[in-house]
Image 1 (cartoon, rainbow, N blue to C red):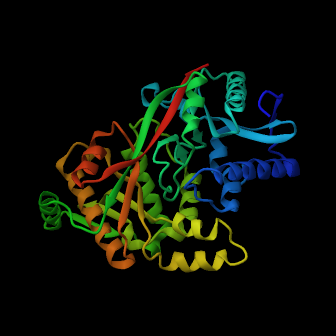
Image 2 (tube, rainbow, N blue to C red; image 1 turned 180 degrees about the horizontal axis):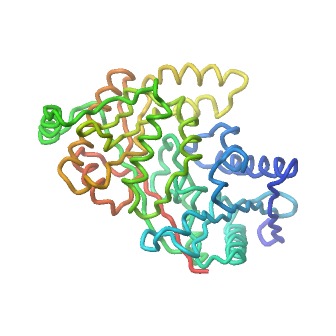
Amino acid sequence: MQGSKIDIRPLSDKGKAGKRDRAAFVDLGRSFARRVPNSVPQLRSEDLDLVDPAKNPFFEHATVQLFIAARDGQPVGRISAHIDHLALEISPEQGMGPGTGMFGYFDAEDEEVARALLETAEAWLRQQGMTRALGPITMSIWEEPGLLVKGQDHPPMVMMGHHPAHYREWIENAGYVPAKKLVTYDLDVRGGFSPLIQRIVRSGSKNDRISVRPVDLARYDEEIATILAILNDAWSTNWGFVPFTPAEVAHAGKKLKPIIKAPLNRIAEVDGKPVAFMLTFPDVNDIMARIDGKLFPTGWFHLLRWLRKPMGAGMRVPLMGVLRELHNSRMASQLAFMMIEQIRLEAVRLYGTTRGELGWVLDDNQGMVAIADAIDSKINREYLIFDKTL
């Protein structure tokens, strides 16, 4: 009952107690998610791995504290407070920098609980010497950054957060202000693009210097390393950028391998040098919704069958990048359009795809916004990252 005493407990990360606490933290979040219309349950094992220091390499460069709130002995909310030590080394002009702590995994029964959780996370961050809080970021900037503030009317695609609309008011009432907006773009992929885009694509196809190819799954680890090396260069001046570590590269490659389909993921080369990439994932949330995020008793069978041939699935482009040396050049946009068109054709031909989603995209990333506009995509989801001086 609102008004009763709220107890907030820091969770252990050691031994059996840590295992029990992480399970309680994850299960509480899953119970909150089930209340939100259009939310899609994920595999519990994957949710557990994300908060396990032994399984998520983010913890190798981060200090993390998880909290659960209870009222009259019943859990009523959760939050993480964390410091990404690599983010502390980033220029403040890029949104991070010295003194920047973060909160994430934010769920609350009501505004009273929300305020208590945020105050607890802020106090912990101050104790660690932090002077500002950014959030929600769950937990790496590469996982689920931001709070969904537009788009609750449809389910999220793979690896996208989904939150109730009233969380925004609770966070802003606690003194937070928006720091950055992230958006996703929805696209009908069944038809071709405009004559101008088609001419750009044809011109690139005739250029002997340019090669756009599918990823080579026989050299999977090497290809993933190439892609993430381009990413670390291409995104290095973006707001919120924190570089992938070698351990995170290996972890991401292993985690993503089941949904990597060679024809849907492209590397562009100029004079034989890899300079750009585009990753496209079949929307595994399609099958997760049908099996309710449960592998047993029969969910594993349906999931494996879907992974072999995700017919009719939507497609999400979570990441693309072009080396900085080509930024602001005509070739950069040409390579992007070539990859988009090749992937679009293959998604429709092989899987009967009708819908694609690009993002997330920083709303002030002029190059990506221009590309999204040129292919007639429309913003369908908006996320906000909030900031508060401590």
